[in-house]
Length: 319
Image 1 (cartoon, one colour):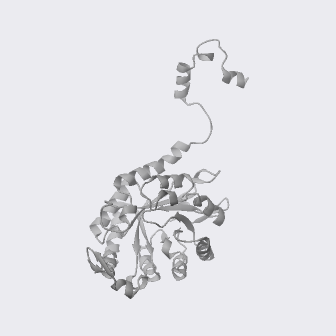
Image 2: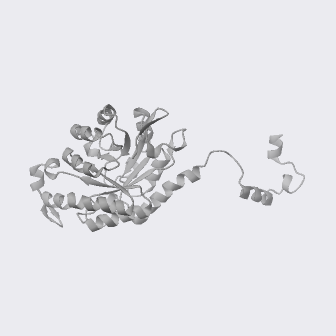
Image 3: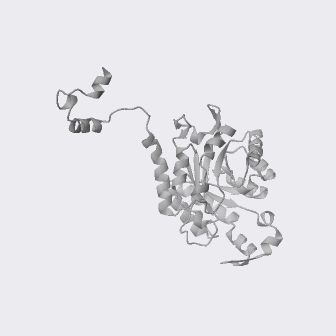
């Protein structure tokens, strides 16, 4: 399991301590890619397993779900209000249908172990966090709406387990308070830059916040995206995100409020492929001629040392 370390004054967790470069900002060699299933399973364990398979096949490191205690998270008035869904005509009918319980999570836990992929969940209330403890999950997650929920922050931070804290729909005051809780408990964390719109327009993504969050809090940062394309998440990894999280779906046409902000199979495969390519394309920064370049130089430089007596500019500069 990831543990806290110190790397050049930046709090770190072990899945991201090896970097490709330190300046002008650190870039992780192995970015943790999280496939957010959330409630896109639509209450169907079979769909949840298909999404787990999709994440594993694409090369993701973990899948994430959501856990709520319906009667704590929502008011009675809200739950009784009308809402048309495949499961009924009230908000309660829809919310309860989307919520997995112990039987489903026992099956998810066993299935992820069989498939060979980590799983964890974002709890939306303290009892849900207590429920998740039975599975001894590798990570915790604070969802953007919950960053100001003091009781939940304390409950999660007291576990001292690596935690991803999403910063959507929050100002620095809320982030300051959340960071203070986790540091008081000596709980390692990654601040996840996030724009909590579903889907989020690309002009609103403001990826430079990754740099500012790292500078302000002296901690590692990640990215939780809700845009339609995969490119911003790749750019986030290039800007130093040690973890990237994206919602996934079998089809954006499926029922559900998160489906439109999710990646389908091909988009997820491309996302992981592009992120895994970053260490290879960045290289080590040392300027050198490759063997193929030397061959091409002999073919294409019709003057100079390869083809005749004309003076080569490189040779002259070296002299």
